[in-house]
Structure formats: C-alpha cells, structure tokens
Length: 283
Image 1 (cartoon, rainbow, N blue to C red):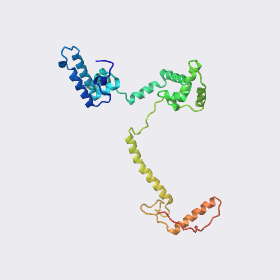
Image 2: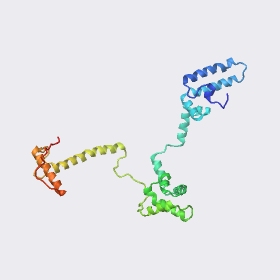
Image 3: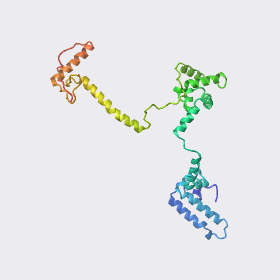
Image 4: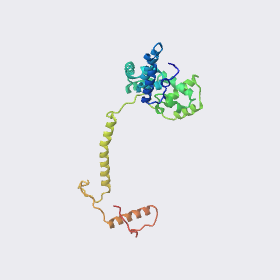
C-alpha cells in the first residue's frame, strides 16, 4: 500500500469518520484483499496484513489519537496502550519528579551565580537595556531584590566593554541608585515560626479570629454609645441589660442638637428648636 496516502485514504473514509464507518470500510477491503480470494497473488498476504494493522490503529481510540497527532503508524503502535505505559514508567524511573524543594535549591544555586550573570547580560543586550523587559524574561529575578545587583553587574560589563551602554539603562540605573539597596538580596526567605503550612489551616485561623474581632468591635461601640446602659461601680457595663430606647420627643431633641452643632461648625444661624417638619425615625 502506498506510503504517501493516509490511513483514512487507504480505507476510503474521511478523517472524522465514525467507528461504524471505519469498520464497514475495513470489512469491505478485507473481502477484496483476503489471500483466499487472491490465490496466486504473492502480494495479497502483505496487503491484507497491512490492512489489519491499519484497522488496528483506527479502531483503537488511543492509537487513533496518536496517529492523528503524529501521522505515523509506528508511533501509533508504540505510543499508545500498554507499550506507552511501560515507556512512561521507564522514563519516569530515569527522571524523578521535580519537587518544590528542588525548585528552591535550584533558585538558591542560580541566583548570584556566573550563569545568572551570563543570562542577564544576554537579556540586557537582547532588549537594548530595557530593564523592565529584562526582569520579565530573567528567571528567578525580582525587581525589588535584584535591581541593585543587576545594575552593578551590567555596569561592570559596560566598563569592561563586554556590552554596550543604552540610554534606557542609564536612566533606570540612576533611579535605582536613588533607592536604598536591600540588606541581603540573596538570602532565602524563611517562614515565620508558627506560620500555617496549608491553606486550610490559614482559613481556620481566620475563622477563629474573626468572631473575636467582631465581638470586640461590638463591645467597643456599646461602651461608647450606650448611655442608657446600667453599669457597675467599677465603671464596666452590666451585661445582659438592654439600653432603654429613647422616645420620639427625645429623638427629635437629639436630632435638633446635632443640626445646631453642624450649623455652628459651619458658621450658620442656629436654633434650639427642632424643625417644624415632622421627624420620623427609621425602625
């Protein structure tokens, strides 16, 4: 069978053909290419075996997916099913899983290294001294921690004529020099003692702390504004004693006092009587 044609073309079906149509096309060709019906044809056996192999790929969803992605019949056999699982386990054994500790270790070794300096100068030259862009591309970099380090590194390279000086870098370097440098930019950040290691622990801590804060706020407001509350001799508010609700007249008088205070603060004429407009309380 021609190597230039796709498996779908060999079967005479479209690429998005259903499994039923693929099966129907396979049976049709199998009847035509079966060796028993092509006695004396030395190539019939090979064609029939190729047809079976093609059907074996297109009738298997995993193998068909690999073929659609690679266009290779061999890859379809090797990169799907049990063979693929065996290969995956083999290569997983060669290359262990990368952990967060591995990333931290890499960052600690990379930052401040000659490799970092070489990458930095490469990015500096590539982006013509635009340090905002350099920080976006330079791995393991932080503009707040590394600006002074990078400035010194690039200025040394400029002095030794390893790289060109760009106006954008000069302006950036001047702004960096005006800021205080971090004390130890290469130090590894550590978790504070007692800091929660999981999101669930953090949520639990917040939930446990929030009611206490809310109760404290309510108690503070009650102590400040509840004039009618009964109090003990030590000046603390007596618990479970509700403040007496003011009458309509008391409410109107209080509002009038507030209006007078506001008018006095703004230099307006004041009145000791409440407005003639009927006052209504919100309940």
